[in-house]
Length: 227
Image (cartoon, rainbow, N blue to C red; front, top):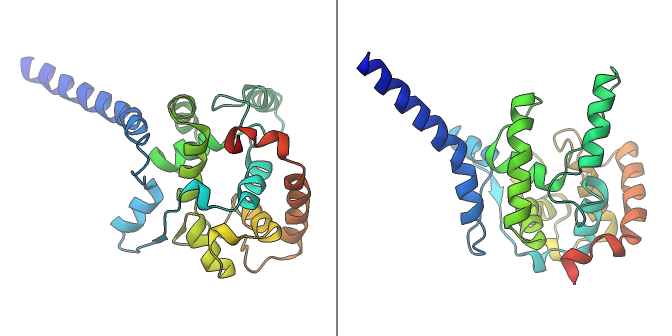
């Protein structure tokens, strides 16, 4: 019995350590010169695929791209604390009513998922994602959060971060992205394997035009990043 008790104690300690590790890393990642990698990057390394990621500071990223991503992915980024609870309640109500649910994932939630969790829908992942997103938004500045997100987001097979994406799709640095290029990259984020920003179809071009118009009027929404 004592041996069984010790085994259970060790298992509990391992579980606690695994759960606590992401929160410790959130504190570590407040240090500006640390450049986090995502779980997908680690997967590619383990599978010996390699990947292309060139870290750039926030100030070296075109505001066109920042505006387009916010308008496409999380228009309330500057106003919520990691989770848009109004959108989340709407999604829950739709699910309870048996309706098809829409996405309610914020940029902090996507950052937490990319850094610490896995792809695919599950209640377990979402339950872990929410407190991580709130913690990241609380500990990091909005600028640091956006910087990390844009440097770990996947924009194609083995293409991570906005600098690699800009070079791969448009042969320009992230600092020189035009409004249209930024909008194309932003709308490709939900599915970069099927949505190719560098070779957009009509549907992707139509979405990009919509996001481009929204981004041009986004001044009030991005103040937390450019004040």
